[in-house]
Amino acid sequence: MKNETQIVTTKTDVITANEATETLFTAEFFRSGTQYYQLCISNTKIKFEPITFAQICNFMDLQNENEKRLIKLDLDQNRQIIIEDLTVNYVYCIDEPQEPYIVNFATNTVFVFVPCCLPNTNQNNEIWENYLLDRFEKYKPDAKRWIGAYCYFSQWEYENISYEKRLSNLLLTGARGTGKSTFALLMGSIFGKYHFGLLDNEQFSSKFNSWKSNKLDFIDESSEYTRERKTMYQALKMHNGNNIVGIERKGKDLIFQKNQTTFIIASNDSTPIFTVFDEMPDNEKTNQFFTIEFKELNEMNDTIIRDLEQSFYHYIQTELKQVFYNEVVPYINTNRWIVSTPITETQIKMYNINKTQMDYLKEEITFFFKEEYLNNGKTFISNQSLNEYALDNTKHKSDTLLKGDLIKWDFITVALKPKNVNGKTMRGFNINVGEVNRLYEKYSGNKQ
Image (cartoon, rainbow, N blue to C red):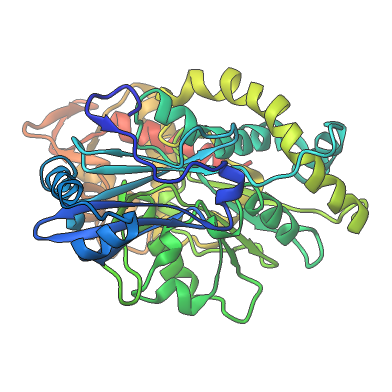
């Protein structure tokens, strides 16, 4: 982080960050093993190119042999990196960054500062207040926290402490023409096209995965490139679970990068991705999908879109900055993701659509245990009672198969000693009170 020791700031050219967004603005030289490398940042994306010492001397216009010797000594002793283990951390800055990048030799990390690309020509915040209310309705406060975190978390984390957290993904459903792509493109414009990806099936499944280096990736499920949704769900889970990702580009060395990618997935269908019902989040603190149905637009035309583009920067710098520091930062420690994400009616429907017969059985047994046993102070169920329930209420041929599922689900454990039930000594199982209560609360919420 910024206050760590042994941080070396390195630049050869000093120009503004805005100028840097479209041109190669700096190049530096390092040694990794026996090879020298040139660090280049083009369009705010980093790459390392092999280079000889003679080329370095030509680049720096070194004529004096003593100067060459000192430069080589500096490279060999002070500017050593381990390129195969180097981590790149993009720091996204709404406020103008002071440096294009910083190299931390102690942690073998390069911090690259990415400036905001938005114009600041309209200071009317009401444009965005009305737009977010129209699109997100009662979830407008959650949308403001989500956008505020998208804009400010990276810079705040760099200046404070690393939390290894990412933003929940945004799933947008709704009929064609409800503005799903418009919202995604507005979000992508914040840090520019070089950190925003439009993904199709071929890119998403390719081993060359430069899209993982983006700040935001947009997947349009309405396109002809729609990926098999179950596979996409698993891929998203896997990607979201990694703090560091390997970026592999064709013909280039593998680069490791801090995982900061957020996905917006849009679909005309009510199920933009396949989900597993049993993985429905328990609460908003663990929810990784902000799922919203966009209704028919009240009004949208080129003039309104232009006003949204021109007023976005001011809205971020004023309203959303306050929202981030007042409503997000104080609660970051309490959430799995950067912000708490509401479990919306649309999300509940999405998970319920994918219920299997076993999901229904699990839900039914949860209510049975809760209402017939736990609510009456009972935490033990006999073999006889379980067998009767299996035969009367499930498709299990006997309680033996049902017991196996209940133990696998952590609903019950074998009681080591028989217990007295209504004057009879009976063998059976102890009910896992914590797990049943957790699922009861979860399933009760899903019935809204």
